[in-house]
Length: 287
Image 1 (cartoon, rainbow, N blue to C red):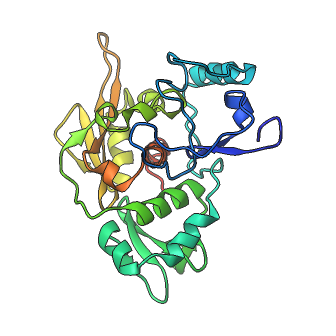
Image 2: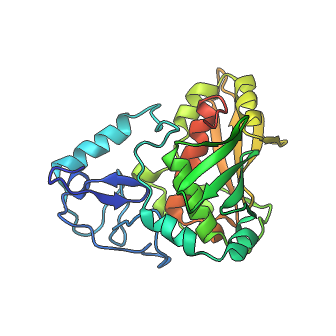
Image 3: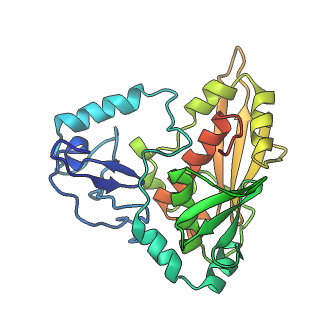
């Protein structure tokens, strides 16, 4: 919540606009290069502006709050948000749209299955989650039936995928975030952060393998250790780890399938990568 008590959605995170950039109001906006709306919220970026701590072109309201936010972003080293996603609020409109969606289209495009009397079974990292539009809950199979998942980030990303997934299958061609059409989005506070993963797994290949395999990861012959994680049926993520030594620092790369932007907008891709990275840091726990 900002100083004025107002909250405006910036991507997947609720940030008071005056805290970020000093603006009183953030108008609804679109991705200014592709013209596609960012589905987790609204983002207002003037053309030629690198949001975060890049170079700014044209007028921009530099508030003290914005400068402070830059400093906080620089100083964060290993503070990816907790896997519960408590900082995320799921818009009620997503559930409303899910309830109105054509079940056949949703299942066909997203690779989900219908679940009677209502809902969808969605494969997620080696297990299935039940997305129930009537109860507005997501659940996992437990010993005594379905157990509700209290993870608002997973809830949000799952809903967005079900609502926006397209008919295209994965291409099998990997792409870095810089190669995506919406690469300009992934800067500053929306950069795909790998430093916490490097700090945790840079010298621990076995720990990385264990965490990835707990999430249903499939080993691939790349780097010193690499895994393909099927986040959703049409959205794989590839984590590549090079172990550090006396000469080179450890490095982790996150690669996407070339088709990812068919199924998810930029802010949803960013949220998904955060979600999976958090789970890896938790040792492969999905709870």
